[in-house]
Length: 564
Image (cartoon, rainbow, N blue to C red; front, side, top):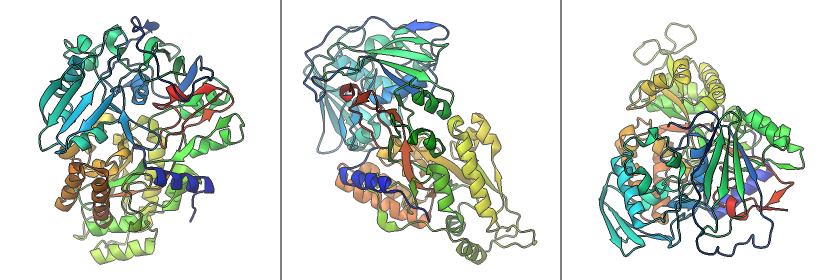
């Protein structure tokens, strides 16, 4: 069995010691520009970069199109960049250790009864059009998110109360833990300007020039749709501290291969793609270049196989156990991560995540054991064609449904092919759900709103992995809005217990219990644990911080990256 190289082992050890990291219509044609910039705020705080040279233009490459410029959506390159406290002012963000910190807000606190979040805003925070950020905007954000954006996470707000000019208290009913809300919404929850959005009834369709206005450290300047590149500039004297990166360009490339070549050719300085690290097959292109770093880090996210609770045979524990032994984890690991992988444990969540329980043991490839379990459970080859019938003697052809994801389509197809080969070797016939791979509508009909899939191949992103993570994808969709089907009461109770905690010690204990149930009932199986790679240049700049599973383009890049 292959194991991780020494580099990965050291990285994982460091991560376990430090903590864990955590998840429209746009202008078209020609060049679009932004409205006027905000006025200067208070003098910047002293930073570690004091005295070093500013980066005049940081060039970022990704594969998401520059086609959607709307603060209320997560679409396009603009939406992707806003996960980094970029143009958007986020309520909360994570540091390199995975700890939650205030974003654009000055501070926050959670009440002892875990029902109320108290948020204090700074005195010198401005929207990019020069209007001050006030409590009107904060209250509007929660109400607009609940009533217009229809965010399920805000549905249980019972009261919004102000205290003075800078503090607001948001209270939820007993169905929502304030602690879980903050940790679950970190990196996603943005502050919206009331004076722009209050009269917009269909926010995702809004294409006004002011749709990009936020209160983050950078403002949108323009986009060249033909060249697929957008431009941004630092806000003058941003209240959080000195911004060492003066301007940023974000360019879209057609593929990861094109991104890597752009990096080698000095067209960009760093690769950023939320939950889209480059494949290990591209490593040789970079490894021998002295000016580039692979940007490898432990990946909190993971690819996983989910079993449909609503369909046979995937709702049969014996069948799930047999599948777990039929899977060749070395082949899956090498396919996903090259040499940088290790065998997954039975609790599904990857080891860098808080609450990970390594005592549950690794999954084991043992096809003979898989055959024994199937035989005992009555899955027999009655007609002698080489494939097993179900316990009732009916022909069995199990559908493999990969997640609909255009950027991962080829990789998911490879995983599906390996899985099909593994299962065929123990007598289980399968068919690839090609329609769901190529049609979002077909995938939605199969996977969403109470899914009818049997074997589902998906991915838990590094951002989602930060809090509850993979188990959230598994639970019945009525609980989360995702595509899970699992309705087992013991599992639901354990999931609700995680959602109800109000401190990290209880969270870790509740997550261990949830993993125990997963290890026994096997509603899902990870294919492998490994690394992510977001390469960057090292010849021109320093001060990069490589966030695990995320890369060097993150919320600290703007304050730490300087010229050599």
